[in-house]
Length: 82
Image (tube, rainbow, N blue to C red):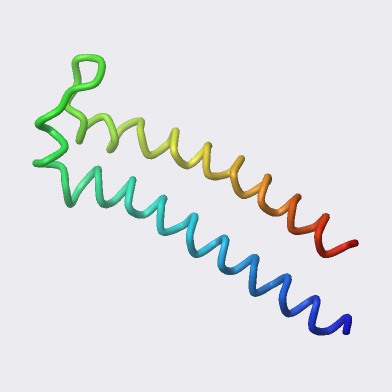
């Protein structure tokens, strides 16, 4: 029983990591490099949106993803320890 709970814990942890890293990749590489021409049609604070994501947006999203990961892992820890 304990071994299956540990495997389930790590499986869920890796799922969270995969999803969050995919979001980070999409924001940093996708919005900042791949879709920059489309994103530059819009402006935020006087700067083109593609430039903003490349310089600041990906950092903000990364910090938010850290807090999301902490929240998800605390919830997973609580569920696993019950």
